[in-house]
Image: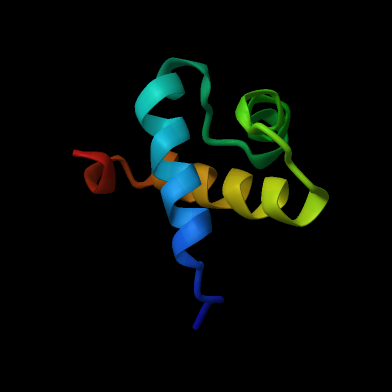
Length: 65
């Protein structure tokens, strides 16, 4: 079983995916700078959690529909 994401992480992730889907990839290291650029005040933990969740959603395209 994986770690549970907080509502804040989910809200930020869905907002970034909705607005910047064309910039996001299926690779975590490529999503990190994109997420850091679009979050207002990212710290390392939040940036990595959002980038990881973005990566997971981009790999599972069915969840985005």
